[in-house]
Image (cartoon, rainbow, N blue to C red; front, top):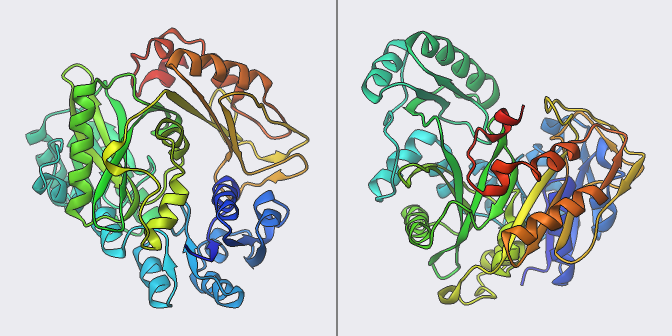
Length: 445
């Protein structure tokens, strides 16, 4: 097993990786910005190195500072978590070129799946269902209009280099397309340094379902079930659950087989997620994108499949066999994750601030992955995620009941917080029925 691990991230995911590292007897090293020096992940690591000021470009995305921290502390491996440098193929190559172990997929797989158009074409060639859309970037507005006419409105206008729900717009007609194309292209150039835009079919009522895959050290790719991710605001997830209440055993079999084919197509190693759109009226699903990293919502899979995905990542990176039998994977029970953000519960606008009260719920089937404690400050420099509340039960109904109780027990004061939204959602008849889609939050508002 790896003996020393540098975690190139912050907050709850850094703390969560450190927890598994310590359980396995691995020496853990945290890197942090000047703004994050008082956060729990810094003090819980065996060593900590400040890599720069609050600005992520000067700290958490500062490749040379992170590599110097690895050299100075004698780190053997680097785990990038999610966000920041986690899907940066050049960083992965640099880490491995420096003689360190990269805890993630190979740089070639990251590159292959990082461009949405290239990924769509690869998946189509591998026999993974793909919605109708452009097979190359729409070079200009005229090309986008022509593509949309062929696909049929409404269409999704999407940044080819985007991710995380960013860089997307919906056009119901040509007039809207002309507006959205310019908007998405400008956003993509500013945020991703790549203004390439693709046009694809848009589904007015759709569910967002993803499959957790793991590429093993022996070359096999296995699927650890699906997650439902349809509770979203601004195309970004708020709630995830596993198994999906929309997926039958027959549909699950098709989902998992397609996800394995997707991983095999790029010789995938380590943890990744194949994200799909599911048309509930036809039970058709279509490839959306592959996230070549550990997902925020990985804990619900851990509960349902009885694995520690971070440990499995480390074992793959070290060339070891998994702790589970790849031929005997089966879901058990139900798990739900709620993303506790520093944002108001109505408009979901960020509301950072000093935390004066922080009391986490506890009990059977309750887990909290948090990045903060009372006395810390949620700053405006990073994502608004403060914690993840994960609950599990033998049934979905039991998990929902435990979620209600846990939300009521969770006390946070200081920054704005979306806990009241979850209390509302957990009483919403549409959510409780399991028959909901990506429009559920907008209908609640």
